Length: 231
Image 1 (tube, rainbow, N blue to C red):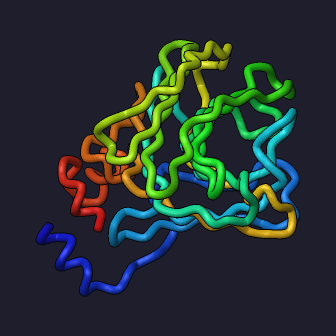
Image 2 (image 1 turned 30 degrees about the vertical axis):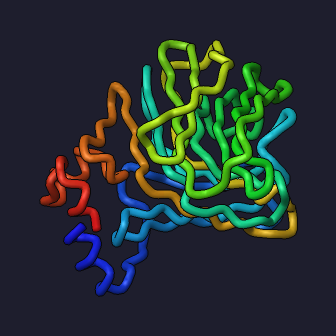
């Protein structure tokens, strides 16, 4: 609480994404997306256009990191613009950066609550399961154990609701995990904000859940167990 009060007097400092995070547009987007990181509050700002993350090929902006094996990604969607009722901002595990890649994705929409969707075959059809009619802010989580994927959402980050579908997707061990935003509107950019971003995998550890991997914090003189030092 003291750190939050002190930070309230400090202008937000926004710059590039911390390593190992990367970002790029996926698929055919009419307007280039972008991403940045605000140190005050450890907020990821992601702007994406695109027709949708759906059908046999996706178009969106993706903030991601490479990982291997079992993993988990959690984030809180603080806001998502209403560029279309089904505009999407959420967490994704994706086999690669091609438009038709296999993936699992749990997303918050501006008008249709939360959904869990997936593509289990490369360039195949997409499927989804509808969650409750909730709105931002909302915590989202995806887990992968071998080729089993599970999705969850929560209003407070403590009490989680699991989507009924426990999927099996035959995805390579080497994959990506990250934050995905699609305007679902070819002529618009949708800006979504995320905090409490946390990735766990065999190769990546973020002990304090501030969105910065332990390796980055140790290399830059930060405390890997203190979430407030990222602010």
